Image (cartoon, rainbow, N blue to C red; front, side, top):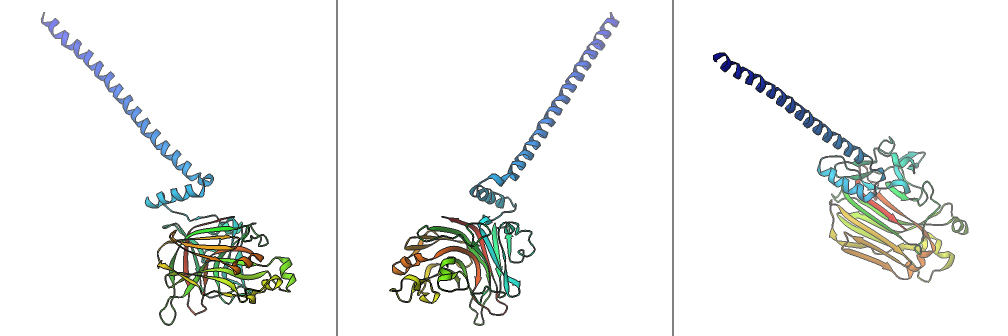
Length: 330
């Protein structure tokens, strides 16, 4: 009887041991399953990263929104600027002629050794920096620039627009840094323009060597204020071929926006339509140009410009203008 009593616990012990082994195996399988679930989660993150990198098919607005998110997380941010319809003029050159970089080469500005000193990303705030100083100038100017010029057909200056066709340019900008003159006052620079252009037929008609016509709009950063100047006829009775000559036009008195932008980020919008031009600062204050001179400006073709056109030749002068967003529509 005693042997029977002892044999039963041993038998039960074997049963319990087997059950514990089975349970341990089940726990091991559960852990393996948990590990697999964790690994699958990592694969999902990788897939999401791959999708993020495939952002070339996104719209500019979507990229800009994602750029803002990535800025908050400490990632690189790129400016919201499509350069496919812009060329840039630099303050350096050969034989007295400034270097100009057109599409498609301008699209590689981030790795272009010629462009890098003058046009580069600030990946912290998502801007494209335009740096310039007194250097090589264009034939019709004594001042240098790092400035974009609109090209409706990439690589060509020949296709432009009239006020009857209209156009809009929107941009977000800021002044990063600019030098001062001998009196301690900041130098000034032109940050946006609408420039006139003679057609080939008009050029030949008045015997000019090039297609240059006056700029009908110049927007300055001047001591922290946005200043706007336009062109008016010296004699409003001027008509016909006489309108094509640069000396038929002169600057108006200019207009200063009341809001001081200083070195802060600001927005500008330029609207051109038949007989009318409007400039809007920070979506709150605007100046409208109209009248007989604007009506007669319709004789010219035009193109937009944006960037950093420094208005001094002082030794040691410089400016750095930031553009965060730039958009043109026709």
